[in-house]
Length: 88
Ligand SMILES: [Zn+2]
Image 1 (cartoon, rainbow, N blue to C red):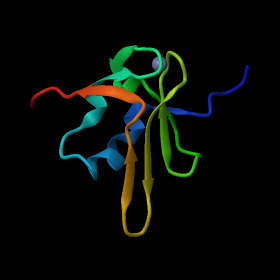
Image 2 (image 1 turned 90 degrees about the vertical axis):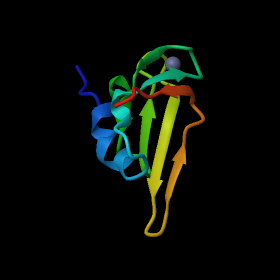
Image 3 (image 1 turned 180 degrees about the vertical axis):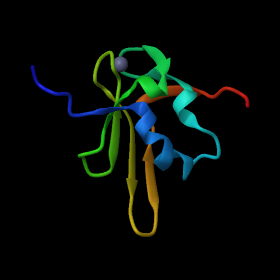
Image 4 (image 1 turned 135 degrees about the horizontal axis):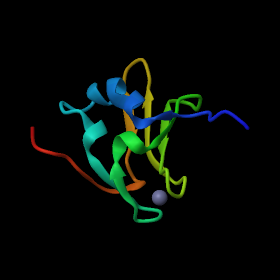
């Protein structure tokens, strides 16, 4: 049996908190690839790519990419139809 080479979406909390004032790991996102809705923490998070890549645990489509350079943070959310963020 091979070991998974990804973490769960909770591991993205630190990087995402630098961009958003709320914790997005508890937000519900809809995958633009397969339409599955799930709590972001259930995404598969790959940190061995350039930056960080979160993939849908249903169809493996890319949901989110975050790349941090010395001057900027790039956030690509095109794999999510939406993020539903609970009110605090
Ligand atoms: Zn999907």
